[in-house]
Image 1 (cartoon, rainbow, N blue to C red):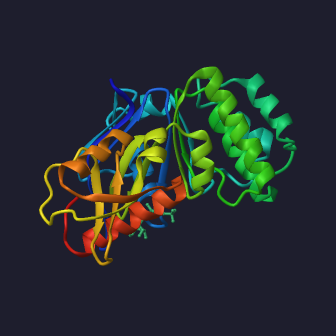
Image 2: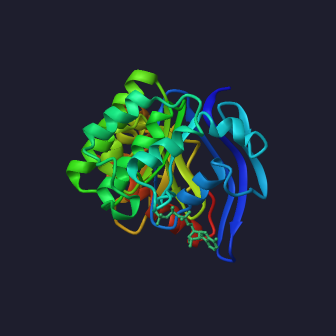
Length: 302
Ligand code: ATP
């Protein structure tokens, strides 16, 4: 087993207009993997497939070496899940929801659950129906962590939470990961939040994974290069050319997988490089999505 979560050749169709085709994704053991994508990219659908809540048309999914959905019950015993929409019975109180959850998880840590409830200032007697969005977000994280999972799958766990609650929830998560060494798949639109906490990143758009790599490579490896004199036919490159824009007098290239010694490539093709611009994670993310959409609109393959 090389990954905590491994998805290979996944194919799924939702309605007439959305399809996941040939999706490959690996969350390495011990990684905190940030799953980025625009609205409607397919993150929640992919997460639901990984959790065995949807059946793929083709492909394989393993979580901790267990086949999904065939071995889902054994898999679920080791996985903490925060879904996009709360899945709690609204008439239960906080305390009852904790007891209810505990009954399903052999490794439930009652002390940790109580400590988190106190840290999160959750009233044990309050019905779920009366919790604010922030309180619900805290309770969902508490329930996922107190089962002491080996893998956490978190679908926008901080969506709609204020900065204080967000910090509380993420601190609890990071403390747990530091202590127990769990692997995490976490989706979000908050690029800067993922940038701070994740060591891997996957970028999804319109049912495809556009990129997957260590966060440091993503942050340092995406460049916009301004150059001239490049030939129309390019020999093989040591980086990935995401986009070549020849509409200006100087060409603009968007590349990923860039390292400084690769500038020798341009000497080799007789091109003159005027500028190599760093993009921060958010710019890199936006550029990747934009370039991916332009390529697909032209029917190209990257
Ligand atoms: P967001 O960031 O907005 O939550 P997402 O990346 O999680 O988006 P999904 O919720 O996976 O995206 O949705 C992907 C696409 O699939 C969307 O266009 C959505 O409308 C469509 N979709 C999801 N479920 C169904 C369904 N049951 N029937 C038809 N279309 C669906």
